Image (cartoon, rainbow, N blue to C red; front, side, top):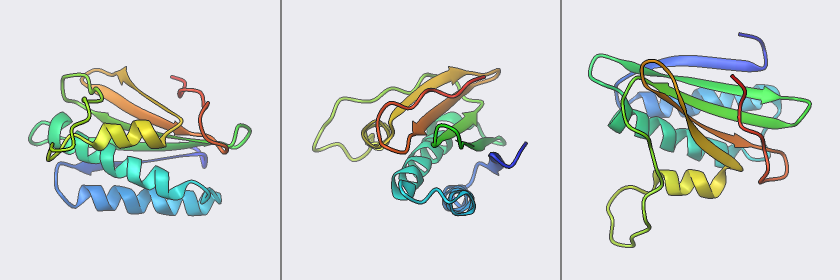
Length: 139
């Protein structure tokens, strides 16, 4: 792991979401990446919550990886979990009590997606300096 990548493993527990958000806040501050910090922090909250609710089997956890590309001015967020299934943005419903997390990620991030890992998946999102148009993370 180099200075441009920070990662931390979290156990399947409620405190992991605020801890992941604080870890991200500290990384962004250290990198001087504060312009879109609120959007990034909200997406970290949503992706880590989804991992805990849907992607992390009992007794396991998830990995949060944050990477900056100084040349492009981008920040990539990845949440690795060992659960099955492929996340998808649900249809909007004003009366739904949950299911808005990926709607928010889709609205705030420049791009997002799901990648494979064995076992499980990686749900990622990316933020460029000027909004939409960032590249997906490599490898």
